[in-house]
Image (cartoon, rainbow, N blue to C red; front, side, top):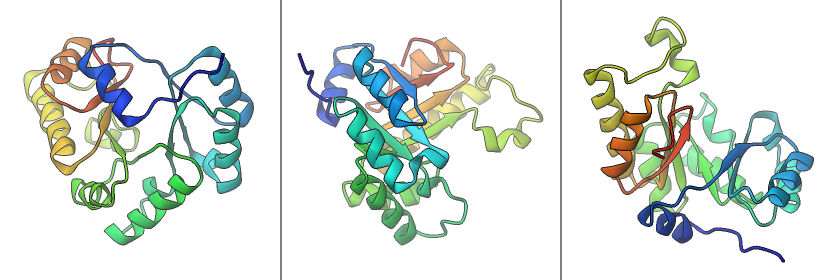
Length: 193
């Protein structure tokens, strides 16, 4: 029996009902097809896998999975809202149900005005590791935990549909999830998302 692909409305209902969903990272159509067959709810694909033809092949291989694509709009060369919106529309045309970007809230707000579903990123952000001195969990003290909460709320105010919280203590993730309407995607941040 073919299952129905989740919509943003379905994801928001799942959050309201405190349902846990599954997400994984894929790089190719074979992995995407396996995720679809296994009943994975969401998949994220980024980097070289998001070239237009491969992104379309991933979409075709996983027609029943909510697909988040992240490439062109992660590019540090994107300098303005117009470029970000253009890159996001290309990802949507390739089959994305949402796009992932850690860009500024101003850019996310512009994308949201165009009805582009955006997922941001808080907590440990790999390319920001220099700010922390070395790779480590983020949010282990009150100031860091509150900063992650503020960043999450800024994404909500900008119109994002969700955030990925990476390498943050599980209790912090759970408390943030209670205080936002955003979808909270945990990446090494406990089951509170």
